[in-house]
Amino acid sequence: MARKTFKPLDFSGARTYPLKQRFSKINESLLGKKPRKGIRLRSFIQGLPDILGAQNLKAIACAVARAHRANKTILLGMGAQSIKVGLSPLIIDFMEKGSPADAPTPPASSGEAGTRPSAAPDPGR
Image 1 (cartoon, rainbow, N blue to C red):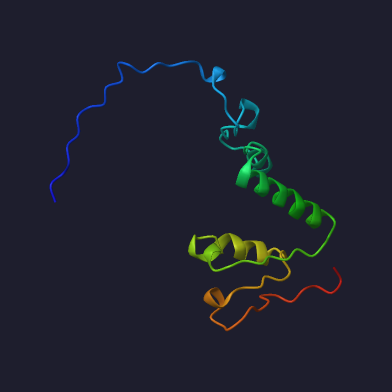
Image 2 (tube, helix red, strand yellow):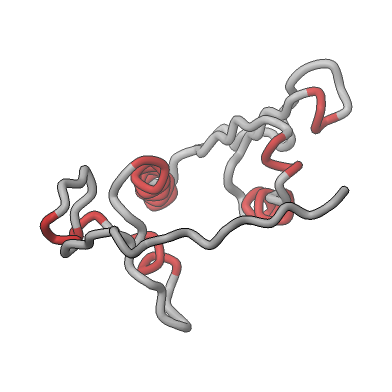
């Protein structure tokens, strides 16, 4: 197939104005912070923007940390997508360190027709 060619765009009539004058649902305080080399995970998470998915991730990270500090059982419910996108080494590491105590997995990731716990919950927790 022949490659299409396009005329260069003409920006001579374009007008610009400072970003600070533009209405936006996002303001500077909500923007993420560029991570510095060698920062701790906590600093990285705190530097994420406080909106949408990053806001949810921050809330989940805080809840998991709070539960871990309180010696509570942490359950991980997930679909096969987590494995498909390459998170299995992280999930395995998480489980080997004792959390989550129970990780129900779907048929696509377990090879079985239903969810199954990958580790028995600790009754003392």
